[in-house]
Image (cartoon, rainbow, N blue to C red; front, side):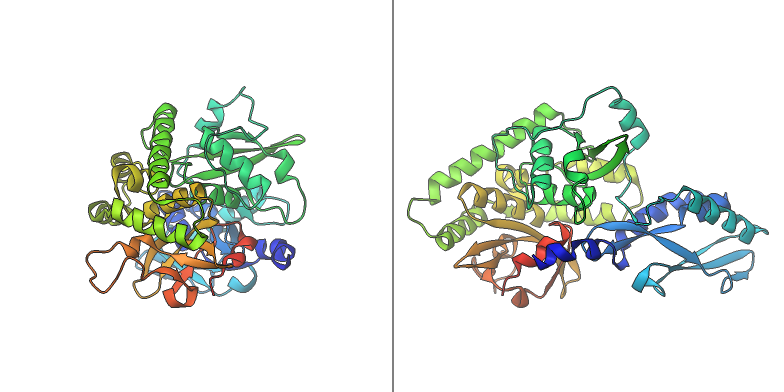
Length: 414
C-alpha cells in the first residue's frame, strides 16, 4: 500500500517534541546538574515524535551564543537539529559553574562519541526500567523464538505484532525477534510493535510497557518490561480467565446467530454501559499522580489500581476509566467476531486524553465510545449518541501509538 511504501520515510521524519517523554527525561537529567558535563550529555539528544508515531532521540543543539548568564544562573536554549524541528526550543534555567561552556561542550562531545553510528535516530521509551538488573536477570536464559498457542484472541497488523502479542499474553517477555526485526526496509521499530501489541490485545494486562532491542552477533533480541503492579504471573493468568468468563457471559446474553455486525456492535455497547460504571475516584487519583514527580506515589497508585487501564476493571470489577471501557469493548467485539480496534487520542474541546473504539460495520469504520455513552452526569447524552459516528463529528486528534505508524490511516471513519 501507499502507507507501507511511505513507512521508512515516516519513521525517519520528526514531527514534534515528545512532551511527556521529554518531561520524563528531564526528571533524570535534573539530578545531574551538579556535574554540568553529565547534564549536557544527558540533554544532547531529546525525545521527538516521528511521523509514524514512534518516539526517537533527536540531536539537540545548544544555543551557547544566545545563553543568558546572570546572577550566577544560566538560561540555556536547546534547538532541535533534526529536519523540520529546527527552531522548536526547550529552555532550562540552572546554576552555572564558571567554566559552564567548556563543560557543556565536553558533554556534547562525549554524547556524540557514544551515539549510534547508523545515521538513524535511536528509538526512545520512557526508561523507568532498570535495564542492567533486568538483563542480568535473564543472562543465561534462552529467548522465545516462536509464538505460543494461547486461549485468547491475538490481534496484530503483522506477524511481527502477533508474535509479540501472543508472547505477552502468555507472560513471555524475552524474545528472539531476528526473523522480524531484520526483515528489511519498512520494518517498524520494536517500540511501535510493542505499543500496538499492548493496545490492541485486551488480554495483555499492563500499562506502560516499554521494549528494548539489541543485537548479539547475527541475532536480534527484544525484552518487554511491564510496570510493576505487584501481580505474579499466576495472578495475571487468573485475571485473564476472569475476563474471558465475563465475555462468555455477555455473548450468551446478547449475541445470537443471524445478527448483523451493526446489531452485534450495538448490543455490546448497550450491554457494557449497563454492566459497568465510570470510576471517577480512580480518575481523580490518576490525574494527581501523573502530576507528581514522586515515583513512590505513582507506584502506590498502580498497585492499588493494577487494572486501571485494561479490560479487567470494567468487565470484572464493573467500574473503570475510558481505557478500561475501550479494552473491555474490544474484548467483547473480538469474541463476537467483529473487526474492532482501540483508539487513543485527545479530545480537543477538553484538552484531555481519551480512549475509545472503532468498529467495521456497514462496509466502513465507525467510532464507538462506550465511555461517553455511559455518562449519567450529562443528561444530554444517550446510550447511542457516540455509536457509529464519524471522526469529524467527534472533534478529536488521534495518537499514532495505538497502531504501527503507517497502518493507522486504514481506520478513518468518514
